[in-house]
Length: 124
Image (spheres, rainbow, N blue to C red):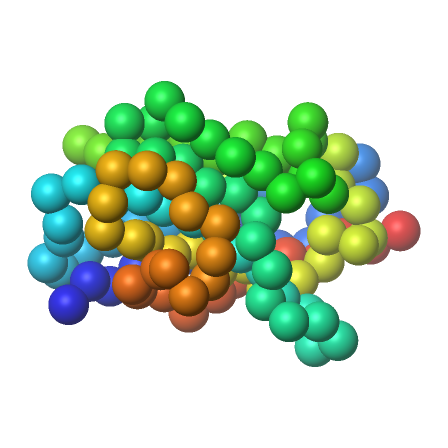
């Protein structure tokens, strides 16, 4: 079993920045991709960003492209989502997830383990 714990959420003004972290523990795969998703009470959980095992391949939702950056430190089993130029519409609970494999993945159903989520609130 893999446990994922997100941190770094909070309240920030529009235009500000936050960095989310996701720490993994327990049984881990030899290679795994990592993704970030978000959800609001009004919308289904949606894809935000993904990064391959090597870190050499990333992919972003159009809504965050150019503002968010995903990265990972495999030695620390920790992954990050740097969020800049935040907008009120970025307000959501952000979840990290891991998927066994070496590629990058954007579908919720492809992921094997999920964290509990961290709240991000952007005020206008």
